[in-house]
Length: 151
Image (cartoon, rainbow, N blue to C red; front, side):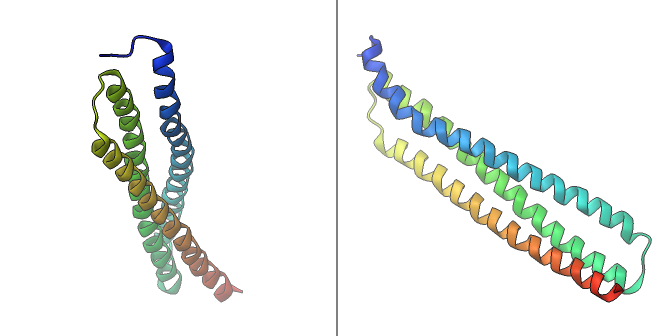
């Protein structure tokens, strides 16, 4: 037996709203993360150009900062990958919700598993995002050290 009226479809649509809102929020999170990754890449390029002209202590400082930026880029890339996985999980969840309702499948374990994996991916993404934010301060500390030595 399949859904034949709008009244039968409305509860399915109401249930699917949660994952749709999650996808919207993840889109904003991905926008933020890709902007951070762009900044890391731009800053790395600037430092690499500057580093080619320097020697000694200044070159060491730039190399240290580039190392931090490299780690940040990895954190942000992995955070983006996990956020995308979470978004894909939410989209899959929406499809599963519709399929289970339309065709009267009873797959609570599959739906629960997809939801849990999606949430774990989101948690992992946010943890990596926090690590990136903390590393930002490390790079800033290295830059401050360079300015203090010049003053």
